[in-house]
Every structure is written in C-alpha cells, then in structure tokens.
Image 1 (cartoon, rainbow, N blue to C red):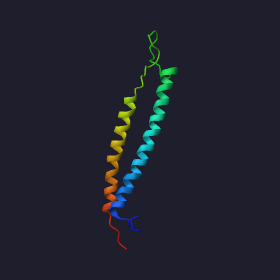
Image 2 (cartoon, rainbow, N blue to C red):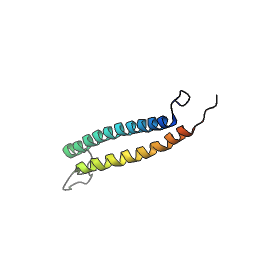
Image 3 (cartoon, rainbow, N blue to C red):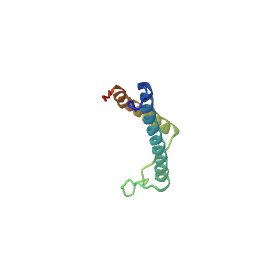
Image 4 (cartoon, helix red, strand yellow):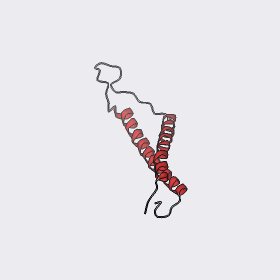
Length: 97
C-alpha cells in the first residue's frame, strides 16, 4: 500500500481497523456459539459428570450478562493490542525501486 501512495498514518489506521473488524466479528461469533452451547448444556445436559448416583447428572452452567461483557472487553483489548505490532512493522517498512 505504501508503494501505491498511501500515507504511513493511513496505513497504520487501516491495519488497526482491519484487526479490529476481525476481532469484533470473532468476538460476536464466539459469544453466539458460547451462548448456544451454554443453553444446550443447561437444557439437555450434554456434558455429564460421569458419577453414578449423583444429585445432578450434568455439569451445571449459569449464564450471566457480565460474563459476556467482560469476555468481550478482554478479547477486544487483547486483539487490539496484538494489532499494534504488525501495524508498526508495516509502517516502518521501506521499499526500494
């Protein structure tokens, strides 16, 4: 992109934006699949304890909104920080003709 005329600051912003979009879509899909799995575990008891004569026969799961909020914030923070290194390296590259 630098060879095509984009400025270094715009390149940095572009790479950070792409990293954020990948992170956001991954977080959304992860939350959806996590919710579906937790609901299925609560409803159908997919993963059992494997203990005969126990009071409960499956691992109990309790979904709370704050679990989803904190998980989303941690994922967004880590992946945004992880996007900084490739963005910096791309900006620091030099091209010879």
